[in-house]
Image 1 (cartoon, rainbow, N blue to C red):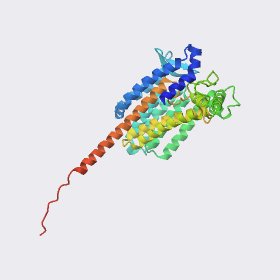
Image 2: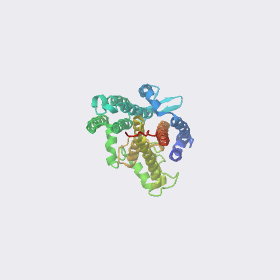
Image 3: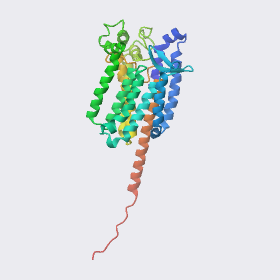
Amino acid sequence: MSCFGLLMVYSASFVQGYQSYENETFFFTRHLIWLLMSVVMFTVFMFFPYRAFRKLIPLILIASFILLALVLVPGLGHTVNGATRWISAGGLTIQPSEFVKLGMIIYVAFIYSRKQAYIDDFKKGLMPPLVIVILVFLLIMRQPDLGTGTSIVLVAGVIAFFSGARMKHLGALAVLAGAGLYYYASSEEYRMNRLVGFRNAFELEQTEGFQLVQSYIAIAHGGVSGAGFGQSVQKLFYLPEAHTDFILAIVSEELGMFGIMLALGGMAFIIGRGVLIGVRCRDAFGSLLAFGIVMQLAIQVVFNAGAVSGLLPITGIPFPFLSYGGSSLLVTLISLGILVNISRNTERRRQERFKREEEHENVPKPQRPKIRSV
């Protein structure tokens, strides 16, 4: 998936790279550097014991709030298209909210794993960690980034569900969360236009519906077999964000249904394996952590594919592995490294358990003394 994404980033961006930087491999080279760093971090976290995160929870929380606060500092925050979501320093640009997403998964999974005995208690068990999630959501909305904020809230809700919280409590929280998201979406006209614009994109073709209409054209041009690798027309400055949020449309245009099935099938396999890892893990923290990671990936796939196809509003959430963006790729591979570590730890414990059972079976049973009946 990473190599497939690297090839598609090159195909979708070489025209813009030459036009903007006189270097057709500009975006490809930067994405390759991020990929190499991500592979290194994947390997590190594959061997880093996930249980050690329990001692790092205070540090993870402090780092999350500091990163989100630094985005709002003039001179550090980098603004693109009216949104200040990045920190730019020394020629390196990172998106803190991507790292905060993983931090919130670790935090919520840890807290709920500790509250299993009283998870049915709304005030004592379910609500306390969600207060931190709400604070993070409010900071992210200052950027603003409704898509990322929504995904963090949804993943926290999914982890709460898998932890065994009562459905009536989750239902009440879902209603409150929906009302809050609607309030923030309707508080700015451009946000509301994005939410409703996808429903009548052709009527708003010159405004809010422009990007979606261009995505439709790309998908239609590709058809079943695709126009061929590198043969996209929409990437020639017709489709905005062709190599980032809407790279799936370029995949469809160039590789047709085969490319779409490769992208969605690859993610479905990874997510399915992640769910199995969560089910097989007997440690509450590891199980909830695995579910949180795969649900975050699933939400990104659904939000991105839904936006590209016009089934959901455009949220600006990247497609895992495919979309250009170093922070997203790095966090994705770190998350999968943690997932692999959970799997390895579970398998090792299973082998140790089987070994103990075999040793117990092989131990000769003590002979009962023969007592003569009187």
